[in-house]
Image (cartoon, rainbow, N blue to C red):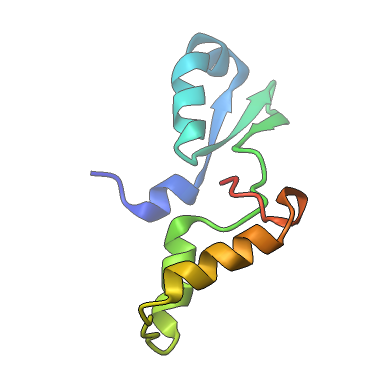
Amino acid sequence: MARKSDKRAVKRVSATEASCSFSRMLDEVERGRRFVVHRRGRNVCVMAPPPSHGRRASECLVLLRARAPVLLDDDFGTDLLEVLAGEGLEDRPSWHS
């Protein structure tokens, strides 16, 4: 089984290897793996996931678990619906990950 640190490591592959295994490499990039493709001994490109513009759910959980516990009262749902109704759709954060 792969360790988490293995996914973060950049693997160097030849252009020939990248050409022959492009689909497999894309699958690995989707899982977070990074590749440096070289040709004739020189690095020519990097295959990596696009930069993310947000937090992963796991990062949010770490932040939430570090905070003091919050007890929700019986009116929480109603309060939340009022807040959501009062803001426009353009004001809401995107949930891209």
